[in-house]
Length: 266
Image (cartoon, rainbow, N blue to C red; front, side, top):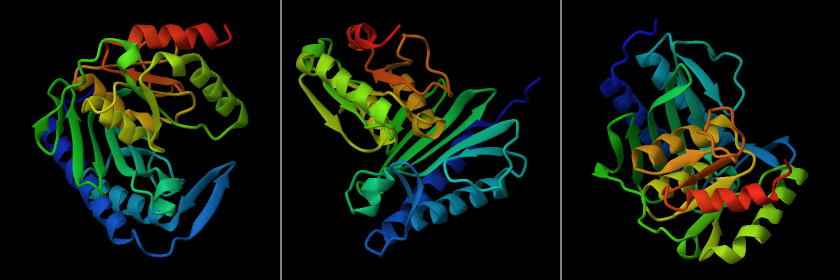
């Protein structure tokens, strides 16, 4: 039986830790970066590691028995725990490394595969997006609500490029399928921030064919708590291990999924 978690305390740790990590990133914004390749079209900077270290140390100080699912490999981190923290210290590393302003810190705490609290902090705009399950979503303390756009033709859609060639080709094909049916398309280079913007009503929908858990965990809760919808490509409720994420204000979810389904191989 799972123990009862103090959501207020969890939310406080999540919020303050995300902001502290974001301030560190902002302080290092103009400093020379050490860029290391960790995979095909996938890089990490020294700032990613510094921010992740700050995050994990803060969380372990508050919750010594919690575990982690973090983007940057660290064999010293515990992975098991009744509560696990899903950590992306810099979502939008390519942007950050070139001093492009769209990047963020993304944190989520989950229990039994269910995200309980999340925080996405945008250091460049000093915007903190937070959500607590069952309590709604907020930006800098103000309630969030998804947009009221109910026609896909009027929707602003965001997406991001996958690293792999096959997944990137799928994205290109889907742009060809969907592009003439939406108002416009944006690519931010940060899934977490795009999801936060869906929750805030700035974007109407977002999809990505190849996400990791740390890309989507925090943003998924934000969108849902702001009144939106997050599913996989087949319209089923998004799960932490689903690579294909489709998020929207809920009003354009069905037509967007229909376009996606018509193009994917059964």
